[in-house]
Amino acid sequence: MRSLFWLLAVFAAAVALVVLGRVNAGYVLFVFPPWRVEFTMLAFSIAAAGGFLILYGLVRLLGQAVSLPTTVRAYRSRRRRDRAHGALAAALQAYYEGRYRRAEKEASLAFEIGPVPGLAALLAARASHQLREFERRDRWLERADASGDDMQTARLVSRAELALEERDFGAARDALRDLQSAEPRHIPTARMLLRAARGAGAWDEVLRLAGHLLKRDAIAPALAEEYKVQANVELLQRSADDAEDFERRWREIPARDQLHPRVAAAAARHATALGNASLAREILEHSLAAEWHSKLIALYGELPLQASAVDRAEEARVRIERAEGWLAERNRDPELLAALGRLCAQAELWGKARSFLEASVSFEESRAAHLELARLAERLGQAPDAQRHFRRAAELP
Image (cartoon, rainbow, N blue to C red; front, side, top):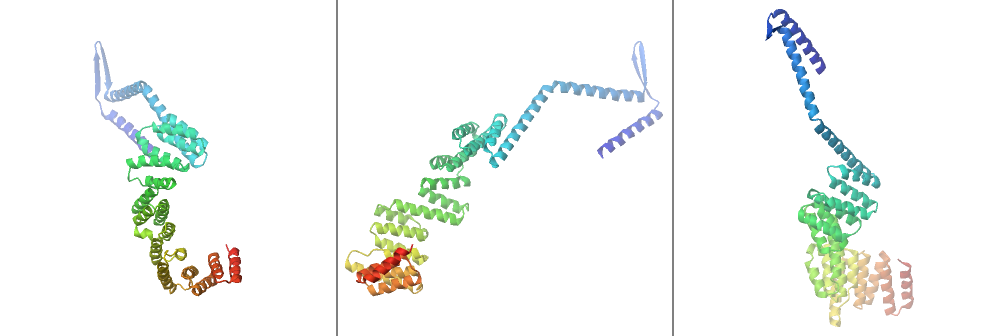
C-alpha cells in the first residue's frame, strides 16, 4: 500500500512539472563575464533538485565514511552481546535438561563475553556442583563474588542452596544470616534458614522461624505445627538430665503446644525418668482432656506411684477414678482397659485388674496386655495361665 502511494505521488509530481513547464514562461539568467547562461524556470528547478540530491548523497556518504569505525565497533559489540545472551540461554536450557557439562561450558562462554558475568558464574557453579566438581564450583563462586554488589542476594542464596544440598548446615546458616541481615523480610531466606536450623539442631531458632513464617502465611499450618512439635520434643530431650531445667523448659512451651500428644508423651516420659510422676500425671491428664489419644492413656497406666504406702493408695484411687470416668465414654477402648488393669494391679486390686486386662485383649490383643496378665497370674500363683499368656505374648508383634 505504501509503495502504491509513493508511485502515485511521483506520477503526480511529473504531471505537475509538465503542466508548469507549459504555462510558465519565466527564465533564470546567470552572468559570469564574459559568459551568460540562461535557463528556463523548469530546467533550473530540475537542475537545482538534482544538485541538492547529489550533494545530500555526497554528505551522507562522507558521514558514513567518517563514522565507519564507530559503526563497526557497535556492530561487533552487538554481535558479542547477542552471542553472550545466546550462550546464557543455551546454558540455562542445558542446565534444566540435566546436561550439566554443556551448561557449564556455555555459562563459561557467557562469563567471558557477556554483560552479566556474575549470573553466568553462578550458573556455572551450580552446574559444577551437580557434576560433583566441588573445587571448580568454589572457583566459580569466587568469580561470582568479584562481580559486584548487585549480585549479592543471588550469590548468598546460591551458596545456601548448595550447602543445604551437601547437608553443610553451618555454611548454609552463615550465608543465610548475612542475607537476612540485609533483607530481613525475604521469605525464601527464612524458609531456607528454617531447613538449615533443623539440620543443625538449632531448635530454638526452628520455633522462632516456624512461628514467623506461619504469621506471614508463608508455610502450611500443618507443616509449621510439625516443625514446632519436633522442636519442642527435641528441646525437652536436651533438658531431660536436670529436673529444674526440664520443668523450666516445659513451662516455657505455650499451653496450646503442651497439649499436643507427641509433646505431652515426651514430657511425661522425661518427667517420670526424673522422678516427677506427679508432673507427668498432670501433663497426661491435661492433654487427654483436650484430645483423646490411646498412646497417652497407655503411658498414664504405666506411671509409677508415690513411695509411701499411704500416698500410693490415695494416688492409685484418684487415678483409677479418673480412668473409670474416661471409661464411661470409651468402654471399648483396649488401651484404656489395659491402663485400668495396670492401675488396679498397682493398687493390688487383683480381681478388677484381671477383668480389665481380659476385656482389653477381648477387643484387641496386644503383647503388653498379655504380659500384664501373665505377671498377674504369677502373683496369684496360677502358673498354667501365666505360661499361656507368656506364649501368646511371644506370638504377637
